[in-house]
Length: 462
Image 1 (tube, rainbow, N blue to C red):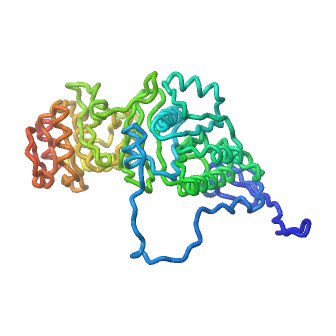
Image 2 (cartoon, rainbow, N blue to C red):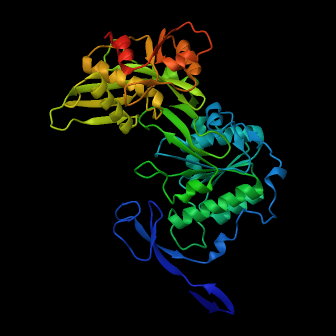
Image 3 (cartoon, rainbow, N blue to C red):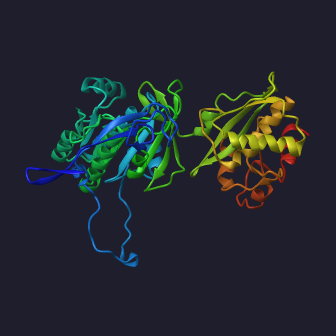
């Protein structure tokens, strides 16, 4: 629908209703979203002039043969925080747009303020834009963190047009937007934080980053389910998506990349929240095994791999008689469906009567593990708790378990062995096929197994 005004054809405003959780739109209000199933999430929005979409960063050039294109390495700038550089793939890429999300109070603003301070000391101007806190509040946090760089500029502003003016005027090398849900474009009638505002503001920031070759970090809120708030297209628009995991009631944080156009998405960064800010944890294995109980049943150590980093974690299981007809199965940090498969394998292949037992599994330290190599550890800790037999404290396990009870090989076993040696373990139970492929010598006792039954006989003594 269009109307003529002053000799010009202008688009007519159109009312629509948009789900604030998933971005699904409807011509009328709905109590229940047919896309995501949430209730009372539809809000009224006005579609206005399409001029906001005129800033596409795509250049109109002629097609070029792929064989004629010269590949070039993207230059990277270190953040002076090794754990963050690891997750980003080696450092910050100029002109990139990075989205970081996490629960409230997890440490997103703290990490970015420390990163901005380091960047300002070594590389030039940094602009920190806050839409949630005043400049005085940011100064209080900066004083606590020891942020003293003269090249770090702070502004409390939510109008993106004003922010864009300051960026073009200052020409900083690094911009932080805290947060994307608070900034808005005046040309859009919808409220800040709405699907339309978040999408269009991100699009404008992407245009600024690519055209001015400025790295832009934006902070995103998360929903109750833990996913980034706003439209799903938000994650597709940015170059990198980082998630801060952990509980604000615990001191340890895990930074994980779920999307990275310039590097791997398998790396993690581990931090500890202290009074002076976030401190890097160089040896996560020592952190996760620090308070491990010795001589307690239901506790085993397994070796997992996060990207190129081997990490030793403790898996705990508690198996007890169920007072109800239907036993409970709960996991923390482990995939529930994978755990249920291991329970079925123990029942069918090992003859364990777990059908009337409550089973609780926990990956200690707030770590979230999805790698199949922890299967053997899950089986061992469940069997240990069920039989009430402690596993040897100097032994760890790694291996994928199939439904026939066989133990399958895992990747990069030598890195796991070296990490176990470093942590003082003397015996490693691993798949037989992985043992055959080990080339390096080891001071540990390496025991290859073909089935879960063999592994449990070694760990629990038959």
